[in-house]
Image (cartoon, rainbow, N blue to C red; front, side, top):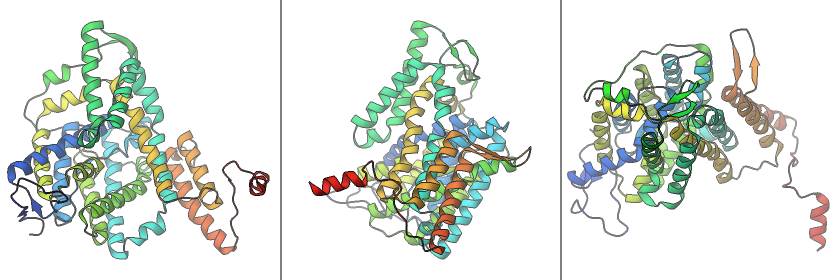
Length: 461
């Protein structure tokens, strides 16, 4: 079967300068297993943060990531070395659904539908070719949607997590920022994880030295409480299955979650392109298959109560640093994830992460997600002096971040990310069609702060 039967690279121990280990190669099994463990370490921070922020079982998320990775490797026949972990793109969606009165099963039901839609998109892309992505989702649209996903989370970080312990949040934010900027190579890839460990240890020390803190707890009530509650850790078993639950389906929750589909397609396309450039293997023919695999993995995970999955940039970074692209290492990583997922006590330790620590992490993490949208614009040289790019993006971003709502009936309304994405996506394509139909030549609405008079003066000088 394709994807197995790796060839031993060289002596299986060393890489000569400039050499790489290709996806169908491996080092000796000892080093391959070690690389698998390194991949787990690099992804475990984000993989655990996502379910904790969404109110899902972190143990189940870790186990689901292992199963999802195996499924991905099988469906792509071992050509795309990637790890599938918990997607952070739905954290804002979970907050909105919770605000509507939904629970974990409502959330996972919505994510399952998005996974199915993602798989359908993958089939379409595989049939029509990768060019369909650029036609339907140009950079101006994908950048706006990614920005909405990140910046829409600002109230969660500022209003829910940060108030639980503002000083621990500040210290964690500063440490994480320092780690992201100063550390290099592998360590910079796990900076978020290091920030979580730092904040966890700091909170434990403060509990022992200063006692309880008087602040908002996880429920928003201002009371005296410990920063870290280990009661769940003491009760948890060392070995056992995670908490499984079936999804339930709500039309309003599904509509809130569906806009993230745009970001998922763009994210998968970017990751596959990055892996293709690193391995030297053109993977455009596998882009649709990779998206189908991610959508199918998301359906499988959410069907039992887990989070949505996505390919992880953290692991792509590890490959770039090590120059080892062997899919055998990802099989080892998936095995480790499955084993860790069977340890409820490990998950309870993660679930006990203090809210203040999450506050420090999320102000950076959510901002980084939002600014990825701006990065998409910059890399693709999106010109916002053109009305076609500026107008729908400006309206959609303000509507999405500002929480503008559009009420249709007593039981149905669109707001936030969903409404913002709808305005950007439909607005861009409708305005583009109208401008072409009218044969209107676009002029500039923004000139970077330089007037015609200023340019005339500069020219004369």
